Length: 243
Image 1: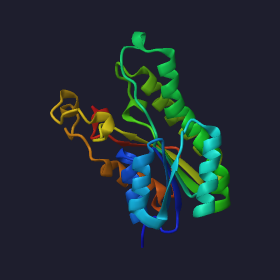
Image 2: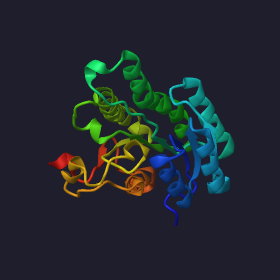
Image 3: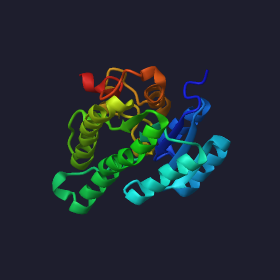
Image 4: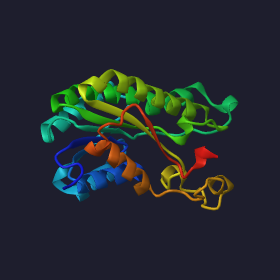
């Protein structure tokens, strides 16, 4: 049997990269998926590719009203939401002293505030579904610090903490909340990073991951196979944080 048979999922930042990989696999595994992104052409094309079990919505994850519209559209099209993957994110690197307040706040809004808005919007629908699974995509940068990433690290550490707080609050209602912490994944964010870069080679597995390797973990957390997992961080970084 398909691992997500009959489930309704919302995946943000789903037009390309890891989000698109998640969406494809979820549909393959029997889910109906609402894909959201600000990248309209690619998102629409992906939904068309995936067929009747996918719908694309243009969506700014920092807009609270937009979140309400996404959840309403998901329910109208497929039914109450069982799974939310908070995948949308941006990165701004550089010296702290050169980082503008506007850029810092933009990263926090997209990477952190959107997770709050998404959880707040979807939980009533999950209650109607009888439970659910929220998968918040954090990062290796939500576990360890590194130079030139103060805004990104702040946002991703926050997602880790928010995940635990929400898991404690909503676990009694059958709503599970976990965070995923990818390391270096071959997505548009690291498109120019070579496999032989010293940072990559310093990890035990010594390579950049394919997005499908993150999707396998997200799929597990979205499915009933992870029914006793909540409030936890799941690391997929090739062992980088272990050394």
